[in-house]
Length: 638
Image 1 (cartoon, rainbow, N blue to C red):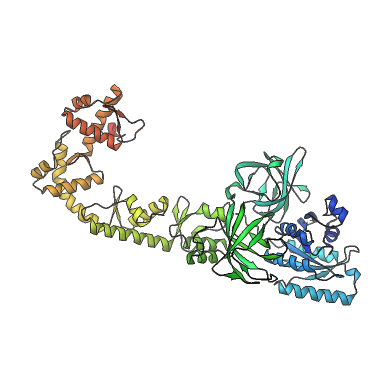
Image 2 (image 1 turned 30 degrees about the vertical axis):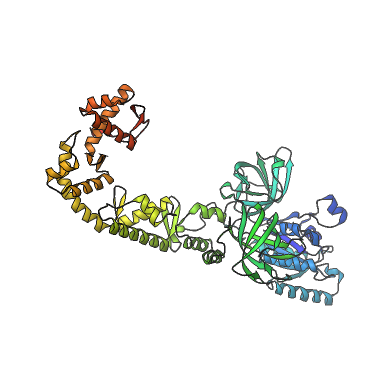
């Protein structure tokens, strides 16, 4: 567990941490000379029956609130300090507001310097503190009285912290990718560059490969780990950690960078958020407001765009988009704080709902409904809501990446409505049914307009019915329809079952009479008019049926009205290969002599092979395409 102090300047935060841990959090010479905390300080309190409790001692000065936010962003339990001889002060209120905006649910108020006032004043300060807690929705926090100098109340406070340390942290999801915002960077002789911070999620082990979120292509090997002053092999949420990294130069990393598992690395210039305006804000927050964004140890300027409303009133919540001037690293459910452009007042804070948010159509009812759904606490509910608002499905890795997970935190098979489509793709059952209905309607309309056609080519059907659907999802949709006997698939053409049966019956009559004649014709089969006469069938009927059979690959049309059966084309391809391998190229005369056909017919067949990709024309010759698989089984078939 990581404990963070908060409160007005000179209310005894550093002294209390020193009394609890024996460590002085003020490490900078200027801090010790001036007697104030400038940068967050760090300490730890060992436990006999558990891991050490970490402490973050944050600055209390009004001009150092940015450093306070950076320190408070990684804590699990807050200690809000109020000096008994001073009472609640401006930074006491602002720090509590920040803790509330960061949604730190656990904490306590510590009345420090209790030895300086009498019992009556102490009771008044406690009443004042409880009233302040009630305004922030933290009325359940206990209030303790201590004197860091005399040691009064220190042991009861230690006991409280030990009990709280037994509660699991809300960030301890084993499926989460490792993330740590850096608050310290330094070098150690024999180790190299060392970075430190509070682990936000995931676990890290010696030997792991990590990356800076802005440079995921450069892997960094974990050379050493240290947590709370001791070397460890593994560290996780609720711990401060110093990580020695191999392959990282000191000048390439700085405070405010994010270290993470490479697969979840990302950065964004637009964040969709659920934003709560601080109750202490002077006015409503409107679109166009320039703000300072604090997210972990990161900070930057952003412009607020309120979504779905004209403004968000003080104490109220709403949706907004933060348009950043420089990219920052954020993941779904990350907490943030906004301060005004002058960095003088805390305006609000909230939760990241979406990264890489769109600049256009951000106010549509569908987008706003999806954002509201992303406020759910359960990751499975957020995933289900994402699928429900993705009419053409989505890849699971995309959702895991945005949410900051290295593995699935739940059983996807048990998510209501979620259907796995293979290859990591998912689609909502209702959207799949709608897409299937579109396919059936497209086929129905096509059959009505072109009853003589076999059906729609699968690629064309996809363009007409679901042009934005990913190919793996489309293939899965077609297979589901085929396995349910709702469509037929004939050599890559989709058709309704009834239409396919009707055509097959008509084709069977022609095929039974015409195909034997084509086979008997050898390398010089009869033309359509001759076939029709010999089979005693209408010429137009024979032509349409042979054209359909050519579409489905059951015969090949070399030129208009001249069709070859598959076995004959195989034999011709074998001859072409043999000539090409013997002579290096296939001349029309050589092919004519091998087939005993006329020159015109030989050229027509060679040009057909050019069109289908077996050969390619080079001057007056035809050459075999290298490594072509077309008719690769020719010799075995012959």
